[in-house]
Length: 445
Ligand SMILES: C[S@@+](CC[C@H](N)C(=O)[O-])C[C@H]1O[C@@H](n2cnc3c(N)ncnc32)[C@H](O)[C@@H]1O
Image 1 (tube, rainbow, N blue to C red):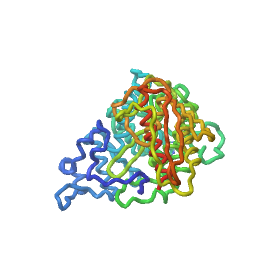
Image 2 (cartoon, helix red, strand yellow):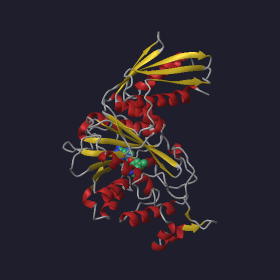
Image 3 (cartoon, helix red, strand yellow):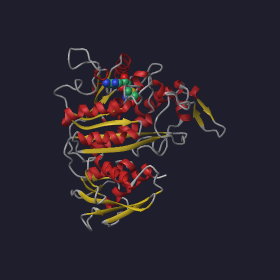
Image 4 (cartoon, rainbow, N blue to C red):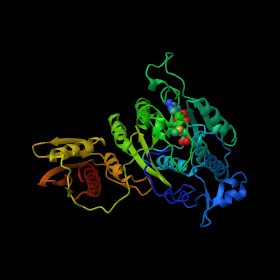
């Protein structure tokens, strides 16, 4: 199937771009070993001219058998799905599970010592996230879905693993909050509201949403075959609409979940969804990028719980400058300085910061919390939560951006920080770096 994620050169095996604690980050699957241990996998392995063991990624039976033996060999899990159902790649799905574990142990939110309880929206026939989360971390799960085949096979996969079956409940989302038939197609099935029971609370929810608006858009990636039915791959409005529904439900359920998370297939959807999040009053937003072989995916997480401490993405050489500037050269003909000024205001607003444009002084005044600064810098840099976080002061960052016309097609953008010589100046330079990247990509040739 055609994936919308950014394409990368395929490493033969899922390589060094996995989460550092993902089992496969230093230890990519050894096809020769697996073929020697599992006779059913052997017919799918062949050797390249350089004598490297390979499988045919375009053969659904090969990718499904690889997933089966990896789950069995590395995780002690019995697993199967019927023909055509979406076949997960284990290293890729493990990345998301490890990121959730990072969020839970990050101390961004106050911690609790109770049994971790997760909710997998759209668990699929493969039920991959509950199986991995329960076997790797002992988490308990509700896995929801709407298709009969997914509900039946997810349950089969749970029951095939008696050592963790008590931890996982499969739940039908084809229930309506009212007796009446839904009037809008998007109301047909619930996402969280109506599926989560009144007394329930969770540490997190996760979701690998149907990414596409049409099955044609999902297409066929000639290089891989992971299967996937229209019900699994497609929904009205694609992933943006699906994740918007999770956001809307989260705005009602609020602190009933510690973390709400979703995977995204298109980086372009991040910005709009993040601005929706700030509009509904979240306290924190985190993003990450999952890279696996040729494919990138993005993780989005948010919460309504007041943060325990302020976290900012990994430090980059922090300059103690309260006045910073950059040039925008080669501005496309159709844009004026006023367009750039307006876009500066929108850039900060979309991340939840307060941003006020003054057209007579050609400036924008901004006040951003450290969480909002973190979002601003992550939008362009996609830092991961990798433990190398830097604690920053609780103060808001207050600064002014000025736009000067230098010559036709060239603008000078100056940023001046109100708190001079403050420890916030390093953060300020990161924020200006993100603004520069965004303005250049939008306005310059
Ligand atoms: C892309 S598949 C993900 C399957 C599995 N979690 C994985 O990562 O491979 C999306 C799943 O969401 C399910 N789904 C679609 N709408 C849903 C809803 N409103 N509630 C629960 N599941 C839904 C589909 O049936 C499908 O199984």
